[in-house]
Image 1 (tube, rainbow, N blue to C red):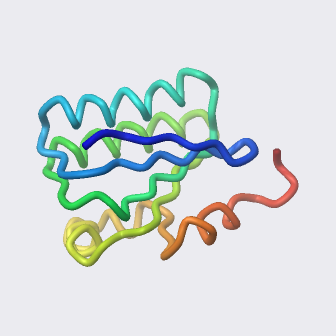
Image 2 (cartoon, rainbow, N blue to C red):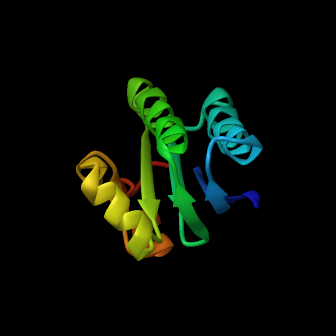
Length: 116
């Protein structure tokens, strides 16, 4: 479990790993997202390829992050959605809120070219 971080130019990629059910792992995810926001980052990719499950508390964390980034003119993109996570986002209609891509490379490329 945990959240790994990588920076690609001005874009930060976070890799949540495991299941997020509202305990310390979810706190770690929220801290990782908000630490990036607090540092002034406006371009974030959440690579959910190693994320097995999210509950409503974890979804709330993602939504707070989304609202924070959007409110500052930033953007959060998702990638690597497995079937279970994609079904959850589809069922809750969040699939229409978050910009999502199959691969990390596609998510990175989706940010406006020339803005570094």
